[in-house]
Image (cartoon, rainbow, N blue to C red; front, side, top):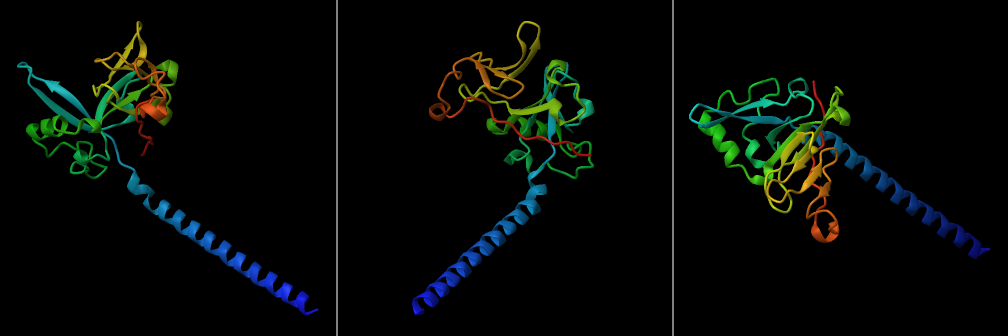
Length: 210
């Protein structure tokens, strides 16, 4: 009889301990979810594209503008610096400003682009009609690192009838698909991604705001 009571007490204590552990886990998960939701807006930044301009003496300047869906033609690409990179931190202004370069001199614009770390160089692509580029939503766009993982050359967007639509390394002729950034021709293809460290180029997750 005494052993039966002791067993019941032990079982009750065990159940209380398990319940306490479950409550702790649930509260901890809820707290982490709240933190994630509270910081999600901080993880979103608008893309500011840059376009080179040449004068009659072949001198270069750059113009900057926020990327807008209606301004980017189907089957085209424009370059930008990673919004989360160190070079862009000082340039971010209020999102209602359509000319983020308005207070910058030409020399400051040139310095920003040309002195940025090469790993900050990205390319924003609006896909071809065949790949859904005429859709009026985020699915029509891709944003990839412009840097070839092997040669460290800047990738070029090719969209002619001979090469189809690709991202190509001008140094080694490596080719990456514009739809997902994966290598489809060149030295990178066929390499074990665990050993080589890559089989595709980095991609930014995109969203469209108002």
